[in-house]
Length: 385
Image: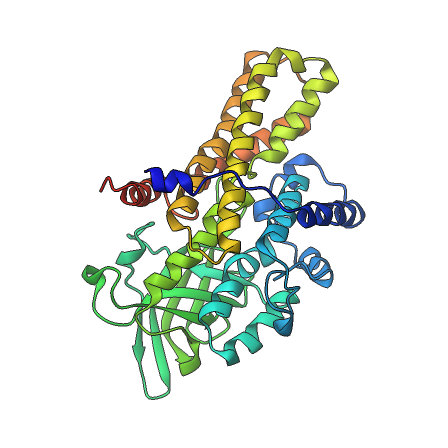
């Protein structure tokens, strides 16, 4: 446990990253339309290909990728600042989100040179959007039990099976799918591989799933004997588990695991100040601020490890688990505060924003790995399992 805690020694963003923050703020003031908070609260899931391409023209999509592949060659600290400001502002980031955060770095690390030169410039220009094919029906977050299978053929691979809860699959051109290439689900991590799947191929069927909030961010994706070329395989056959574990470290540790409810929190505080009621909730606001500050410091520390080339899988799981609790607490506490005195704040935007965030907040502990899976990883990291 001491060794794990040592990995969370306080780290700070470098001065260059804070200088970059000013540029991001200026960009958002000029390019982000004035929208109500219940729309901005959808930031994590807000899909706008146009905004993503505007961001790409600044060099801020795939910004950590090398310039030879269209990236800006910036470090993870700069990306931390960019993501933080985008989420605080409620910018619609969902279109390029996964390709920027996970798919691009994965292809850079494990892909062939041909894959890098084909996909990475498209990602950096926001011309290719990616989704992740991990979860399956009856598997949940137990990725080692996936049953979707790719079988070798004379021309490449034949893919059969299905994925579920795939974010934005109906809008994306590509999926990076974790599938089985040998053995069976009882073999667990052995025999898993990753493939880039062109979602326009014959045999791919994408069915959006409508949620309680009336949105359709997730989809179920069916693969009916989809023919893949040989070069669809990423990395080595059978190395999928190692690759996807490294990929999840990028997904679980950044500001996106802290700020999902931040637009609601900001608007609630603004309403309290406007009505002169902020002091009545000062203790609650203070607890949120203290919790967020601590989580942010932990997230910056994990980012500093990524900058050094480490793969802080357990540390990222810890940030994600605690961060999810914080994100889910915000709508619960604010709704309780509103219901305690319905005459305290008369703001329709606040009610709509609270309603939306409360409806989607349960998904926070599903995406990126369920709470139970994460805590199992943390327990193993601490030597408790």
